[in-house]
Amino acid sequence: MIIEQRPLSVTENGGSLDGTSVHCGYNHVAYVLVVDRANSPISGAVVAGQYGMDNPQATGSKGEGRAEFVTWGVGTCCVVRNPDGSGATSQVSIPTTTNPHEIPIPMLIAGGYCQDEASCQSELSRDLCSGHFSWRVVFQKVR
Image 1 (spheres, rainbow, N blue to C red):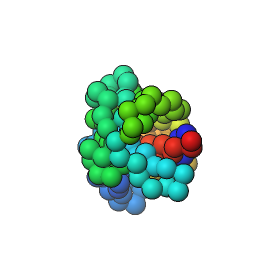
Image 2: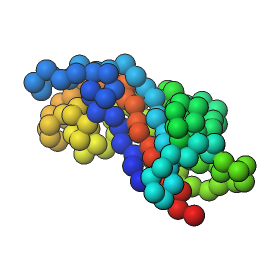
Image 3: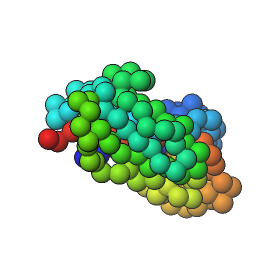
Image 4: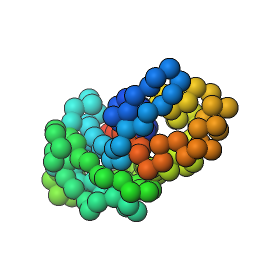
């Protein structure tokens, strides 16, 4: 099950804030973590990305329980194999898009990209950080 999915904040993605002005970072990566019921990282699980993400990779390749996918446009990811090699089924992430117009406004506000609906609409009219959004997706093994 997915226990967290969100775009990284402006600063987490390498950007900065100057008052209400956003200086975008240049990253576009889906950072994936797979954990067990106790939230301990699980390495060796295989995560697959689709539509603009790289090929499947095992967690642990980018740190304990972690994998990363460069995102170009829109992608999704899910866990497809357990560490023991058996098949796995998981939820599929919402699109980890780099298009700001496809990111829900509450997520943009939470990430510090804008302060409210009106400022988001204003920033979106100028293609707010287009192509430069990274995501965090955390899968938790429930069985």
